[in-house]
Every structure is written in structure tokens, then in C-alpha cells.
Image (cartoon, rainbow, N blue to C red):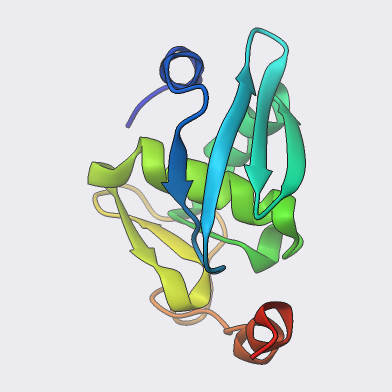
Length: 134
């Protein structure tokens, strides 16, 4: 798994690049990355993150083996975090787009917190339809 320092370096090199969103339709774009933090556009809404917040969230994913959009609040900033993690660590994560879920492909330990069914936590399908206007 990559480190936050590697994420900083990669996102600095990817300014202006688009990436697919997890759970929402459309694309996100990296609009800023420096020592202070990371800025994304998620379907036209700006999301600014500090590296401390991203570090805590990354450690949460590594310790729990899963991360969902809904556990981060379900908004555009949550979609941005999950989507950029999926983009930067594509080979080490399984992405279940319909549930907004990232799952570590390989892990050697027991997760700290886990869902009753590790593969599919409760889905936000009704909310997703509302968000997308379906």
C-alpha cells in the first residue's frame, strides 16, 4: 500500500487530471496539491482536505479493511476521498461502486471495526437515486 507521502507526490504531478467518481456518476478533478493539502472538484463542488485528514482516513481504511462513502458523511467531500483513494491505489483495492465501498484486496490481520457482512454494508441506493435525480 502506498503512503501519504507518495500520494502527495503523485497528486502534485496530476494537477488538472480527471478521475472517475465512486458511488456518484461523473468525474472528479485534482485542482490543487501542496504541503498544506489536496483540493478536488467533485461534480463541480470544491472539496479541500488537509493531509492530516487524509492520513487519518487512510489509516482507517487500512485498519478496518473497508471504507465507504456513507461512513464519511455521504457528501461530495466523502465521494472525493473514496474516489481519489481508489484512483491512487487501484491495484490494492476492490471498488464496489454501487455501494460506494473500498475493500483491501490483501490483508493479514483482523479488522479493528467490521460490518456484520464484510462484503456488503448497508447500501444507500435510495439516496443515490435522489442525489442523481433518477
